[in-house]
Length: 94
Image 1: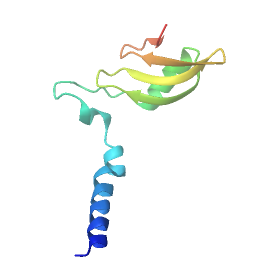
Image 2 (image 1 turned 90 degrees about the horizontal axis):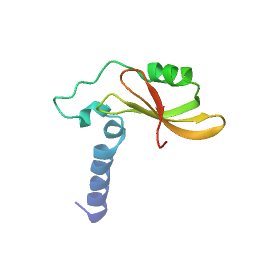
Image 3 (image 1 turned 135 degrees about the horizontal axis):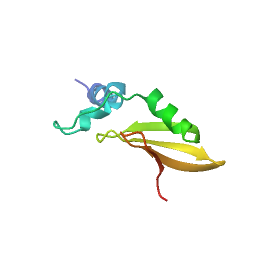
Image 4 (image 1 turned 90 degrees about the vertical axis):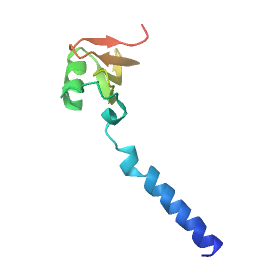
């Protein structure tokens, strides 16, 4: 195998290992085996956060502790918010 062929083979292997399948793996894959992920969805979280008066809710991410974290706006200012599993919406960093 030529040097160029070897380099291409290595590059393709790396792409397969770090490509979309790896990036789109569910967040719960990184959680400890004893942690239970609830059934809340992005749509549920967005609705609750918007219901608490936040706009432009984006970048929603759910942690292994079932807390949702997001970026949003409140009174025209960018903020970070968190939604607890109990449904409480709080501004982070206050």
